[in-house]
Length: 216
Figure 1 (cartoon, helix red, strand yellow):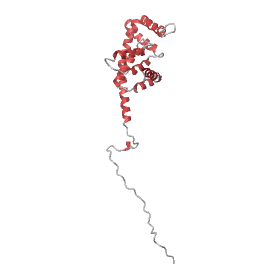
Figure 2 (cartoon, helix red, strand yellow):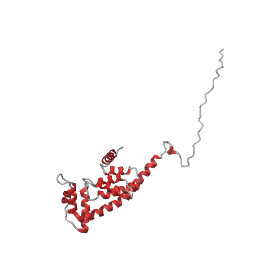
Figure 3 (cartoon, helix red, strand yellow):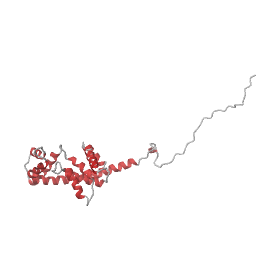
Figure 4 (tube, helix red, strand yellow):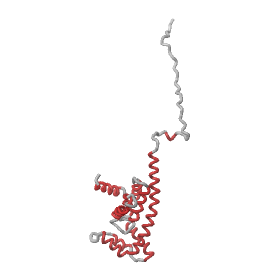
């Protein structure tokens, strides 16, 4: 399989399985990797998903995976899947939460409507211009709030995903080792083999074929 075909399959997998939060979690649990690798990838993806970088979050996940590859390995698909936490429905509320947390420390007066306008790219204002305006207008409140919120979310994501993946993989391994005999579950705890019982047969009276009946 070529690299281009593999990349297309990866993107198709991500788009097909991320239509709902439940499907997103199920897809992450079904990844073929260690619980640590999946949990670390999910935590990194969660951290990036909560940053004010709409439109380039998946590229940041891939770049982070490349930079960190000499030091540690983590599941990049889990990181890409976590980017779907930030989507057109949740993106603005997430950024607003980060901004408001930042204003607790350094202040700020941007309204929710102004924030929505800043983070929404238009044909006349592409995503790069939107990112530049976010950095200029939101500035320190967004930076500080993002660092706090994304770090807390990533720290909570790792143990949660690790436990869920470990439990899912253990249950799947147990299901694969189930006996195929449907009557195996009825045996007792001591596994005492049952001795074959003799089969009773009804004995029919034998008839002497050589006997003759003499009629007088």
